[in-house]
Amino acid sequence: MSSVVAPTGGLASSGLKSPVVRRLLCGAVGLAAFVAIWELGTLLLGLNPQTRTFVTFGPVPTFTAFPELWAQGKIQSAVYASGQRLGYGMLIAIGLGIPVGILMGRSKRFRELSNSPFQLLRMISPLAWMPLAVLVFIGWDQAIVFLIAIASVWPVAYATAAGLAKVDPAWFKVARNLGARPVHMLTQVILPAIAFDIFTGIRLALGVAWVVLVPAELLGVTSGLGYAIRDARETLSYNQLTAMVLVIGVIGWTFDTVCVALIKRYSWHHRGSEC
Image 1 (tube, rainbow, N blue to C red):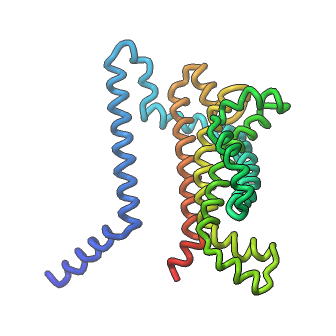
Image 2: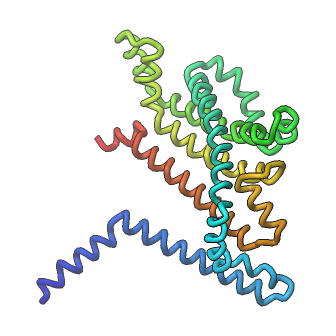
Image 3: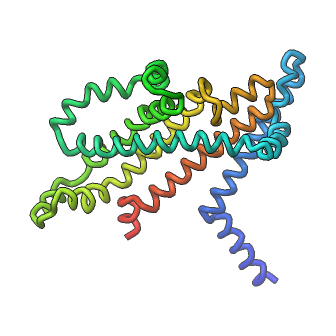
């Protein structure tokens, strides 16, 4: 009997020691604790007559609101509208941030000249640009895309510059001695060497953009996740409001998880560590 039980126990023990299983187990326990605390807070609201109307913020009313929101198409339309704005803004931020970051990392003169104005612009709250963006751009969609881009470009640019500063200068000398042209230097040396830092900057930029997107959509637009939250608040549909907040959290978490996977899969540092 002992010879049969021992291998089974060993398999169970090795399964629990698996990083994937342990990560999933910790995630499940964490989510269960979060829902329990949420439900406890709802019960406390229900005990107070002045806050009893807010019990629909609880987990049970929130989860029951999802089928209704999905059947009405509110979740799909809100995610589509916000996703479009986020995508355009991030494309602009990446398209500007990577070249600017490479210039800062490769040119000392450009870095010295741009440091003060870039730091000044970086420290301005993205939402502080909103009144100016509304005046300059024709519609709210363009204004929101601008706000996302101005908020996201700095993490990409500075992460790119920091990554390039860590590259051994001997690499560039060897590449030039081998007859590498500027385009080859960019595609064969610079970008592979700083891919880890670029993806890390994109991950940070995506988090900033997602935080900026929802407040920007609370004003002026009639679509998107921010508008869905405002509409639920005005109609006193607190369970739908909380449901949309959860949708925002789940999508943001998904974006971050995808960025982490890209960093691990495609970054030069990760591939080098596996060799």
